Amino acid sequence: MKKMSVRISISTAVLLVLGMLVSGIAIAKNAKVDVCHVTGNGTYRLINVSEKAVPAHLAHGDALPGDPVPGVDDKIFFNAHLN
Image (cartoon, rainbow, N blue to C red):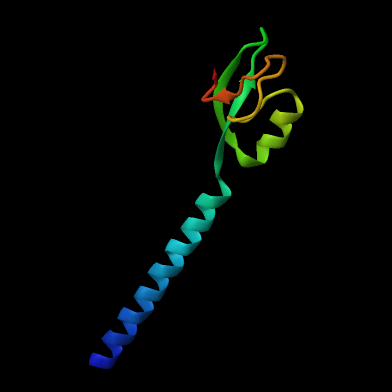
């Protein structure tokens, strides 16, 4: 009986660890990224999008925090504000 409970405990521990790993992978696949999104009037606001959507946002004029502000010398995006 004691051996069986030890095997069940080990099996349970292994399943818990595997579950945590799978959960971590699922969370990592849904990573979010801050993007300075250009609005219709040319201003920017900070949005949070899937990392998979970043290339499309950059392609239509959005930028990442730390990128230069288009048309404004010596300014960079910092949390969607000019710095």
